[in-house]
Image (tube, rainbow, N blue to C red; front, side, top):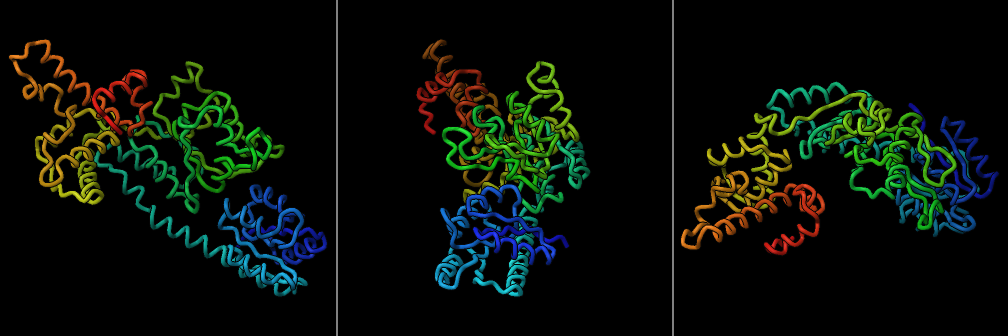
Length: 458
């Protein structure tokens, strides 16, 4: 079995040398640091399982260093090295998260025994976490509804690629379930021991994308008071899900390509590359080949990402799955909201099946949720469904009063329809006003004014 890495931190070079020689003799991979600051910087690169940390060091003591390290890497096991007169400090260190402590002068046999015990603790902890994740996440594949032949094909593709380290590009319209497929790939792969790290490339401001992905060192720019890990380093030995990859600016595309080619990350302001072992799963709702032709996406990056392609069909292309999904959402929201909606009428189900669902599964989910909140119990009928499913003309009869004249009646009906359209768009965009304005092809200001006009208060 491969021995885990150990970091020895002590301001006395003699101690570092003796400890390193003893533990290397036991087969461990050992690194050393002469002070706490150096140790904190090294942790990001070497990711040790165990740190043997001297309590009494200049500038920053071992306990304060341990606390900083545990903020980012709570699983690292820390053993405090203490002088005889500092036992009370070491005991407090254990209360603050240290695994144990060892006194100077150190007995060699005791050092080896304590280190082996700490390593076993580290392994057991990781095995339990891995088992817990497997139990919690083993149903990702089962959560993908696949009654239709198109989705059965997607399932087979996931099974084919999950046991490899191949980069995967998932394509599909918004709301089709790309992240669910990404999770299924990750949690059935050899990388499942650590959680998948997700990044929405379209949600990060352009000025922050590089620091978010690649990290930065202390002093790299004005506000960089401390070093920060990027998503790539966080995803080391795991998978990195790059959602909305088409939104990545050209400058960031160049750096991403370099990372994919060299498997190293260069943090902003850093002078040393950090090696990484990361599986990339990218997703987009855009046609990347068209963006390449328009000069908006790098061809070489497209080839790097498009190693194994999975195309998820829209909901209108997999109508066989709609009934099953509807039943799932019915049970889900009955439990979540304490409702008692027992069934869906045939008329309502027909409307649900025949609707085009431009927002796909997320759109269907929002519509069922909204309808159930209105129905509360009993049968969910067509009257409970959003107006867009029934057709905006079906409620005209109840709104029209012939005696009020043509112009007034048209205004009344169009006003009701406009309000319903805005509400539906808000639900589809998860009440993100910027995306709602884009979907409706109006400005944010116009959307705010309309919401105020119709007393839509979120």
